[in-house]
Image (cartoon, rainbow, N blue to C red; front, side, top):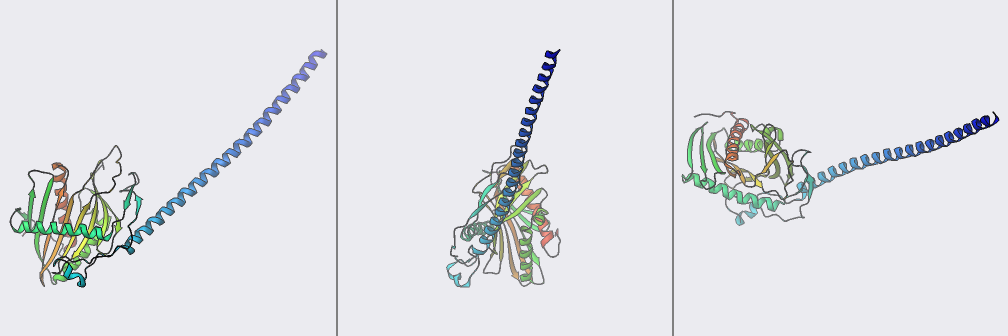
Amino acid sequence: MRCCKQLRVALKHYHDATRSRLEERLLNNQDQLLELWDEYIQTLELQHAITHENQLLTERIDEFLMLECRLLLPEFHNSDEDAGNQSDEMRPAEPTELFDARGFWTHFMDEYDAPFYFECYRASECRAILQRSYQTMVDDIQRVASHEWGLHSGCFGWKGYGQVDATNPALVRFQFIKRLRAASSANLVAEMTRETSRIFHSSKLYGRLYGMRMESQVLQRVNDHASVILQSLSDEHRTLSLRSIMLFGRVEESDKSTTIMNVVIPPRSVPRPPPERMILYIHDCLIYMRLTPVNDEEVDVVYGGHADCLSPELARICVLESVSSFFRWVQHVVPQRLVTSE
């Protein structure tokens, strides 16, 4: 009996000691777990704080670079002093480069796109692009005047001209011409120019001109006469997107004409598209609009362009959207708000 009692006492001491050691180890593990959990929470809070600070810093840097591009890049303007060194029709002054344009990381349209690095364009680069495009427009107008392009009548009161390259069906050229009457031709040109610029710089207003989904954003305001704009034309489900980087420019000419041009700038870097979407980049496209006062009460309007649309199927889509957007532009911008069929 005494042996059994001693055995029970020994077992009790053993169990108590074992439980005490287990409780001590458990408390130690709990303390370590709490310490690790506190460190994890502190690390997460630090990560969120750093991420938020980086986002704010990136936004401030982007704002500074955009402001720097607007304030410090040379102006694109006309000067009477330089008139003798320029052509009679187009005479922007030669600027002096103040600094090398910098860039920044951005998304093309939405946060799901891969980011890409955008380098700001100098005013001299924009001026050179607009000068080449201006000469292309002049050549197109001369071809129409010499009857090289076919006339398609009945375009809601506009004379419509077009040409398709037999060797390259994806290359399209078109032009619409009409003479508008107004109480003051100078005021009409100024109003149409101002409204057109406002539409192109507003993603909401610009999107209303298209039947398909059109997204746009102003990426760089080079100066008062030129801006770099991202554009994306998508189908309803956004499985196909036609994208481009456009240079929007305005040129005031010596004959009191005003020319507005949208010129595609080939992207310097192209982000990789997501696998579920087909994204194509337009590399060659020019859309122009020339407003010329004929006399005090009449203005000649020439709207045209040419583009390499990559394929005949896309060419038909681009032509349809361009023509549709043009007539919507007429309804928005022309003071009488009418598309006549005379």
